Image (cartoon, rainbow, N blue to C red; front, side):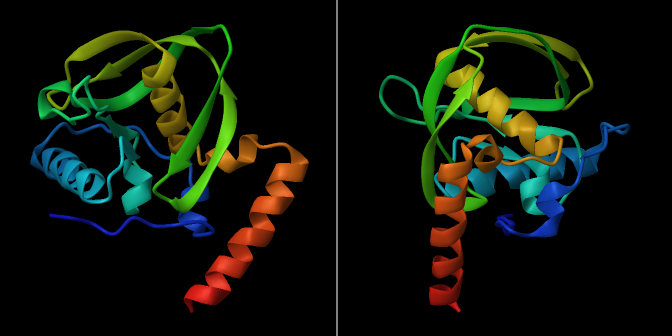
Length: 171
């Protein structure tokens, strides 16, 4: 089932998500719904808080060489923890909760994340480049932050001004 993606400045996006304690049918439904929602909105990642569920759950599905999001490449991460990061990269990011806005963000280039899959099995993943960006972006949501908070003051002010105009225009 496709769920509604909440957008900035919805206060829920500032919520710090809680760890999942039960790896049950409810969690599986949430993960399946998140996947359908992400694909429907042409996203490459989604955190549970973006569908108004404050749990430490995120999914990532980057397009492959053929530019296809193959479900076999889907990452479902529950209670993820960043255990290592190094290097620096700058990447233009967007977010389903801040639709139509893209900006350069500085992130670690190489990371290691520990997390659980939907069945509660512990996993470790090492990633770099775009995948590392996606991980860091989605994990930020879980701590109640958005990528726009990483912008310089000047860029942030410009964003706020454009966003207010857009919200007025859409009313």
